[in-house]
Picture 1 (cartoon, helix red, strand yellow):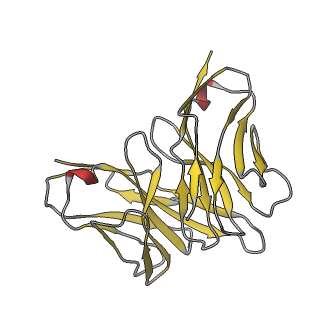
Picture 2 (picture 1 turned 180 degrees about the vertical axis):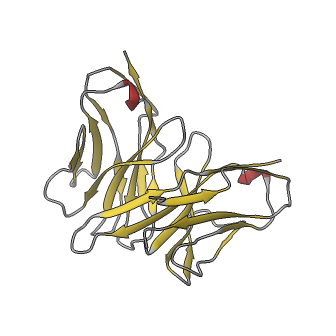
Length: 116
Length: 114
């Protein structure tokens, strides 16, 4: 019963390096999203996807790219890492329960990224 | 635009007592959903409870209940019979009608004292 998985759990980058944070879900959910959480703050939306091939920007998209080639995977790419991107990154998948107003969103365990 | 406001940075409660965590929201969407998540020190986000804007009754999940007052745009979380394991950060969040993702408040740190 995997749910939402994220890799790696921890990562240290030097300024200017690029990397991809991986996210996968096995619940066949349409919606997936990436958030970042800075110390002492709530989560802020980076990018989201409403289905394979469809992505859009959230509140803080600069410096990040996403793509959604399959329903299961939603990787987040840091193009040129900066110290301001030091944060904890959460991936989430979500769906509406048909015929009700119920909406469920599940989070992955997070990736703690430090950029030096 | 949507906004979630949590005005209590930190709260203390005695074990076995009830506690209310405040959340107010602002949205122009006629249909929306409100969520509460718990984040313990280990860092994961744990879903607690959900309230749809058209739901007639307040949501309840075990010891958690959501006091939804639509006219006042508030969605307070009530935890009954607090336990030491309830010590954590608590986040209120909202989903708008666009079905995209969630907007989060800044959180309330709850500490349960024995």
